[in-house]
Length: 299
Image (cartoon, rainbow, N blue to C red; front, side):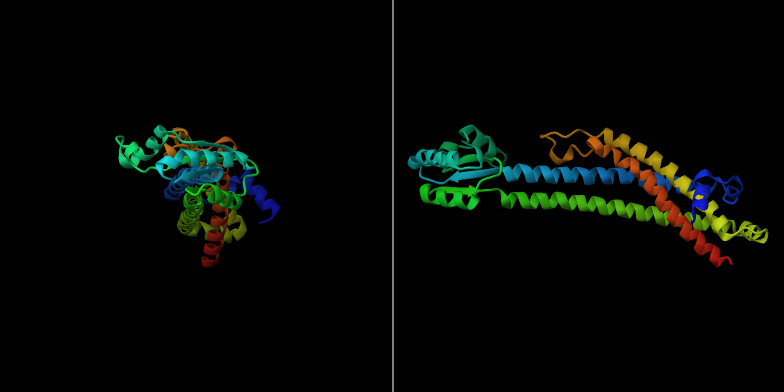
């Protein structure tokens, strides 16, 4: 399609527009499908962006934190805890280190053992929270020193917890992106079916237009223009409703975890605004291919 045809597509052609019926089944189908797909695409994008933010946050938080566990007899636990804290204070790259209180350790175990846990009668190790600074500490060197000076110390850098969580969040992001692509493919398929139905219903009109000298490019342009505009309008309506629904979702909170904060943030609100344009592009190529193929069959 050359520049002249593209200009006609954008500005319209009243004579050519009469080739395609302005109302009817194909018009309703195109508007409905475009709106529904735009609505679903908004939530797919929201899930994708939220999953990306979640993966980054989990990776950052768990990468900066670590836990030192002191497994020592009761009479040696205090001395080993003090020695471990002294080592951590002298270690470059450790921003802070503190021993958790009895109340904090009980709070950590309460979800599994209930609120009446007799901590004083159980051999519970002492936990030390370690927060890394910039650029970080030498993990291998720190572990060797702890093994040498604090025999009961076990250093956990949360790697085994961080990797599955980040992988799960990244999988959700990939799933959302695949869903968006499938939505675009379904939109292209439905518009192709609607365009084929409109072309078949107007077969006699097309024959008359050919008899009076109309070229297939001119006829195809009429169908492309009409279905592209329907897809743009329907998608814009669906995206508008979808963004309104996303705005009603609860904001991010520590209590809600992943179930909150699924909306857009900052410049992310501009991403759904591209969906109507993308729907128009999909409708353009889908209708153009359908029109050229059907017109060849009607020859």
